[in-house]
Length: 244
Image 1: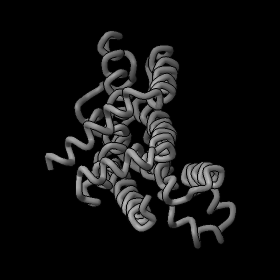
Image 2: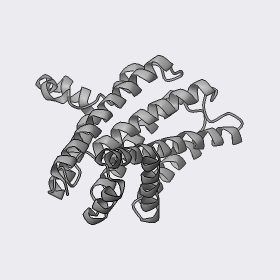
Image 3: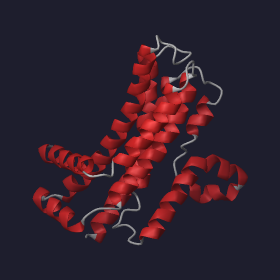
Image 4: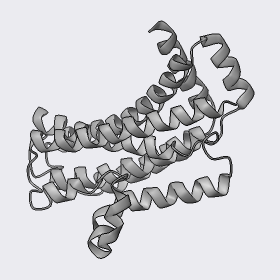
């Protein structure tokens, strides 16, 4: 456990000392400004939905930027010091998960603070602990699948950078529009089952923009969590097989 914690700390230090975090941070700041600083009396579920999709695209970006720029020599050195492939790949996954959770938490904490300063007028509904838990659960699920999908076409999974970028964009768009694509072209469900139903959120909460249901939020999180575990496992297995 100590090696995993130290390895994740190392990855975080490396990430925030570089410049890869700058653009995602700027995008998140711009998003929060226009969604929460410029409006009041919002429907809490509707705002969660917007943030949920934003976090997905943001973490796809983060996952891609981290996985596409690995230094082979540095990574081999880390692996030798850890002396365990399991710890090495697990720490890589936990690092991405932690980044996603950090972004998600910021996207929940900021509106809470704004709501307090606005005298509770940011949302039409009160920002209760129950609503906050639902908000976090949904954003955490979205960040999990975003990070898993963004990092899937790792440089050791697919060496051709242009193809990897193209496939990442394609998978991201199909994940976002899966239900619509299947409704339009029913034969696509034969292979689109490999992608999670990100828009399951819209199916459940489409006509319920004024309140959350914890059981439904948990189901969405669970679906995204399972897909994320599968994606991370497949990616790590391929990376392990391909070596450096």
